[in-house]
Amino acid sequence: MSESFTENDIQKIQEEIEYRKLVVRKNAIEAVKEARAQGDLSENFEYYAAKKEKNRNESRIRYLERLVKNATIITDHSAADEVGLNNTVTVAFPGEEETETYKLVTSIRGNSLKNYISVESPLGKALLGHKTGDRVPVYVSDQVHYEVEIRAIDKSTDESGDTIRSF
Image 1: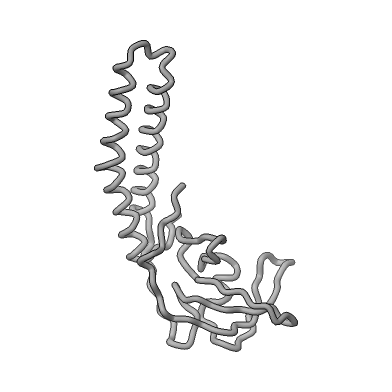
Image 2 (image 1 turned 90 degrees about the vertical axis):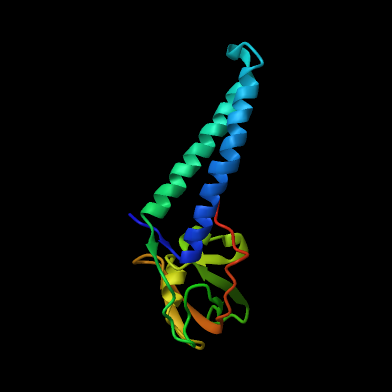
């Protein structure tokens, strides 16, 4: 199964891979060498901690490389007045005056603390392609659904400050 990413997502992932290979890997190998030089490995906590950190870095590199290898590149094809990828959307729940603002992003950028929601989530899927003023049904499951009204769409995109989620 492949993940959907933008070209910018792929670039950021490749930058992290390079950093981990050139900087983190070198530091991890040095830490293991230093800890090993301290003598008896059977009771050397620093050695085991350094090995664990080195293995964690190698695992992250393999994970990121697998993501890039299996990635599907997506682009935004929405019209100027429609909700699309990397747009900020203000929605209201019918009967309530309070609004919520979300930015629609790829799954790897999803971050509920920043109100970044994936275009693959139920709300993200429902909002794509709709216009200001539309009432959109959001289907969470066959039995659970709700409706939101699109109040505003901000098409200005700034992906440069976003970071890729680290696992």
